[in-house]
Amino acid sequence: MTPSLRGAGVQLTLGYFSVPMAVFSDPEVAMTGHTQRSSKTVGFDFVVNCMPASAVAKAHVAGMTNRILKINADRVAP
Image (cartoon, rainbow, N blue to C red; front, side, top):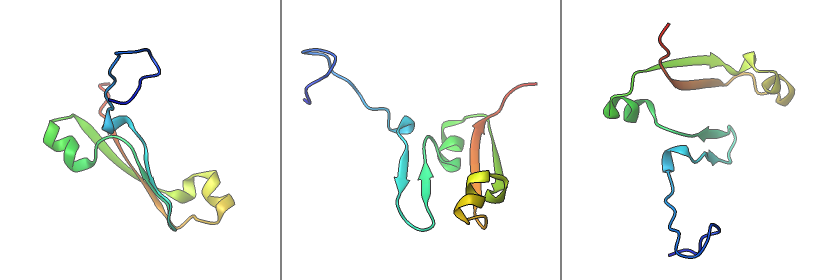
């Protein structure tokens, strides 16, 4: 058992779906949470949206506007 910063004898668990993951490559890849497939498997009510990176100012600064961003999000009732 790894020593806890919260005190002796306190055991913590790690929620792997809430930890960001990044691949340091070119192009960059990052994710956190469920994939589209795992969201379907678990039964979440979600929507998928893709948008061009050119819609993000930082992409223009970095000169990387030829990318896409894909977001899986909880569906929000109207």
